[in-house]
Image (tube, rainbow, N blue to C red; front, top):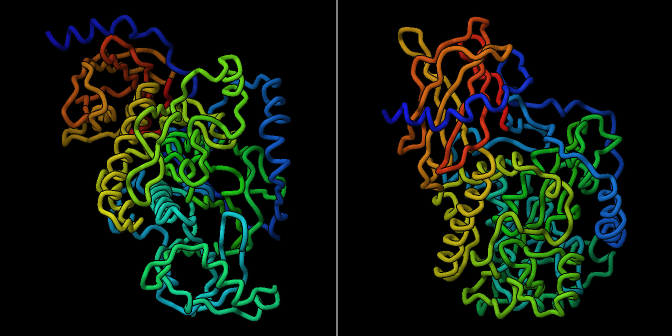
Length: 534
């Protein structure tokens, strides 16, 4: 009776939307893109101007894009089941396999730590302004960039960087090898190269007074290893490199970039911009990196006093107009004293966090061009990080106070779940489609409802399954399926289509809402060959 009732409830939408016209080759999904074809020479180095970049961002190209009235386009760097294959942009890690806590803590750091190979030869320096940094070679001759926490904010930037560095690597992005540790002033020696640049020990001593030093003389720092190969500048937020024949998809059409929106909102990575990306040419092809995460997790809000970071752009005409019309009386979520009571923790909160309203500091076109399918991909990717994974990433920040680590871990988990719940409600969150073969040769069709698997939704849920032939003819009978505590549901003895191509349509009713159907395409012997979300 319950099954019959579920079918009757779903009957109103059983054939309301026709099966999509798209059909797939009878072959497994592609999980590796061949975008490493050797090219004769490195593409030209791409130079950017901060001033021109911001003029283009806030005025020229923003107006141009608005007048173009662009149609929404689905991402183009996806395979037949709407996943992002491995490429020079992205590598499936925790998304396709289990990842141990130890592997996440190690991240991309496969070489010996420079903190174990001192002294360091200074080869260059950035002295002045609010940021201090050096380039150096360790005792093994490996090259690094040395970065510090801003004076008055101990452990904040280096801690935020380490957490986000490990997380985005685990999720599949290319990042440099970055190490956190302590050194002493006597570990820094000048190279001949530095002396030729006019860098002296006296200048180093003066600069180091801007860095917090522990009573025993130790200094906390982040050492970021130079990426291998020839650096050819940042990658563009739109378009592609015309001199790289492997770069065939416009960057704003890449799910690997558009799907970063829920991830960056979760981590409040407001400092995403072209300057914080790197293209490097090695072994005949270009590899694309994300770099510099020190202003994430609320650090920018604290250090730069950009208290509205995450809520508005640095130059946000919409909010400025609202303030002007409201004479400044309209309250904003960033109003008030928001300083955190924990050492090393920026203004990173759950209060007033809305995943759909989050904004980076700069307008970054791929994030604006995302659709709900891109955001769903990013959200389900980040949910594969368990609380143990998140706690392990926080351990890499090496906070000196346990309460800081506790607060950061708990806030990360809460924001992660808020983000996933929002996007899982905009796309029917069914995933993990697979076939189980019975001993008698029949097939069981199985899938996982991610909203239930992660305990993100408590509404009553009902499922119905319909089967179609390749030419969209309905056959068999609709089946009612009930949810399970684990979120994984199987339909036993799935009837195969007579033409060897079966389309399984899954319909879900959550509470009083009929969610968009999901069409799963099966080939010979029930092989998963395609997927189309509505």
